[in-house]
Image (cartoon, rainbow, N blue to C red):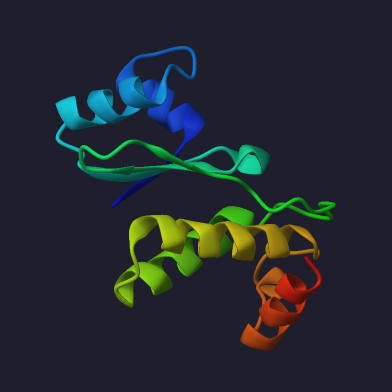
Length: 125
């Protein structure tokens, strides 16, 4: 799974705008990328999985304190769920939640939730 942000995706595809979801999927496929997640910060992410329609995954609405570790939190959570065999969309939804949680606390590693903290965070939503 290729994980890149929207600016990296634009550079890879040689575009200057966001384009359509099918343009994203087809452009990645032309570069032999079958599965990808394009992160968009507060805009969530887009999941590309083969020839299926691109699935937008919204971010979780939070008041950000510090976004320093959000990308790493997202990446770690995504890897955890993909390695456990979860489908890419569900893994991205989980990762978006963990990334959002990380934005609510200062610092990088200190902002990553425990399982209990994440359950409490989700219960409040």
